Image 1: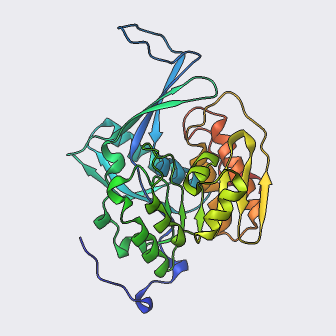
Image 2 (image 1 turned 180 degrees about the vertical axis):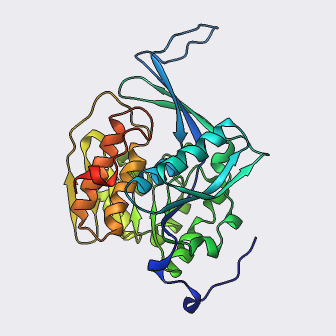
Image 3 (image 1 turned 120 degrees about the horizontal axis):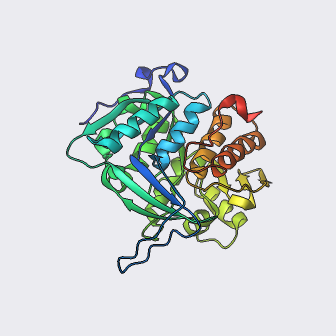
Length: 320
């Protein structure tokens, strides 16, 4: 589907748009297996684990749920399969307050699945792509972009069908008055391709973790990574460091916020909720230190519980 080009004088007023935040979803369910020993042993060995959880997954979905819980009107665009996992995803998004009117049920697809093996303090993930990669360039119409004030993309490397078009979509989003943010998440191919450099000049807020920032920038330190990313045209670089805290950089400002470690949970979705917390403050025009504080509280809340949703704070719980 090709949409007609919309000129500046035809654009709806930015403050009157339906959504504060729009994201392209990586639709999947997380099956989380946790315990002291969750490493499979082949040779038909059956091992017992301590616990499991079936929950909404997908970086963009978890981000959207946290954004909605913070009071941002949030919509996701994507596809789910006509199966029980697809039903779970739509139900959980609705329960969190996310608009699912742009989610398509596609009977030709199986809903994506991530199997997370989580010993204390670590995780490994087996992923079936399915609907994770079911957003295509033609799905991103100008009418869709004009429904929101801000566009967030949180699964750049897994959205292989969409990846080549992201620079174009980000550029056009900004022409249409949207601000933009990007969290690539991990590159399963570990190529960290140069095509990402076509997106960054059209990115207002970039939200990698430390290892992603170092690999994408080809730098050896956090400060050098941030400087290189800013030189590529990013407006704000917010970097997640887990127990090492977090950092935010602009052309004229930098700061580090330590974090008190948590125990008893896992890290699934913590970075995605960090993103939502930071953007909650940034879209409200808050100082960067308050944006970082909101982000850290969201990430820490999720890391204290199992699964990507249970520990997400609501706006009144932020204390900011």
